[in-house]
Image (cartoon, rainbow over all chains, first blue to last red; front, side, top):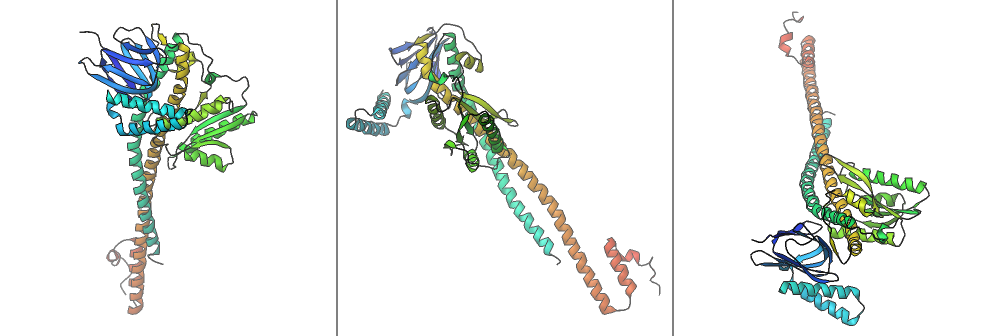
Length: 132
Length: 326
């Protein structure tokens, strides 16, 4: 059996998720997706607002929406530090959908609206993660 | 007036008893809250520890940045203070000791000719400093007994902002550190500018791990993204500590109040019983006196009865020994 990774998702309030995985896929701010397997060299990166996929040994997949944070990999341990993250099953679809509509309307009215753009990005990420 | 004193004492005992009920309830509530607050503080520890260990790794990776949050001013002109107190009183010396420390700090800095800027967290510090005509730049309240990370972020952002625009050159954080259930102490910590990375690493767990890291995008960029989160995590930790301390202080204060109420009740009950006994004695004396006046003549008998009553013995014991022979 292959060596597994320990995965922890830590928010400022508490450890929100911990388990083992065969592979963890994240997206960093500049250089696209990166996947970690056991034996990966120590790594430290800034996460882009994107999903984090945890591939469990049984073939299951846990997906999280991480809006910002960091990933640290060392000694077969993947730690994701994030102050804004949600598990796929915690996402309120209808709320995300209305948020998306509101944000895109605001953006249509004012293309320079940075907050609306960020809100749209967040809502789309939520919808994407929840659909996966 | 016989009976008047007794009635008054009875009323006082009743009022103390209801006060005792309130303080007892507050004590119990604080006791459950302090446990919850401690759990929250413990749950928040991994994040704070990890974020410090990331900084450690960065220091090991040789990250050198010139981040504005690390700006060391050549001359400190204005000092900011974040003062964390509770929203409510009845917590013993909890609020006063933070406020006193804070005021001393402010005085010390102003006497050196520096300006100050207050950020009062919790209703108690805000009302104290407002009453004394200090200038308060920011006041936030409503969450002292159950702070959330968003509260910490709001405060950290406001304070960092005034630091970044150079309205203040240094920020001190004054709060109550929760050491244990029995010990909490007021501490003054430098909040900004952040000390350099090695110092931060030393402040942390000190579990230096070997192995050179890969950084993405770069050590500098990671550190830059990390520093604001680090200030928030520190402030959040301080808020949680303060909340746990507040509940612990309140529990202790309310326990002392309940004990005092009990003691007072015992004392007053004794006084009341004595008053009642006095009233009864007086009444008996009046009756005896009245009977005496009606019966006439036998004065010695009445004297003996009176004397024995005052001595608290049975009158019949005295009769044979007395001069009641004529």
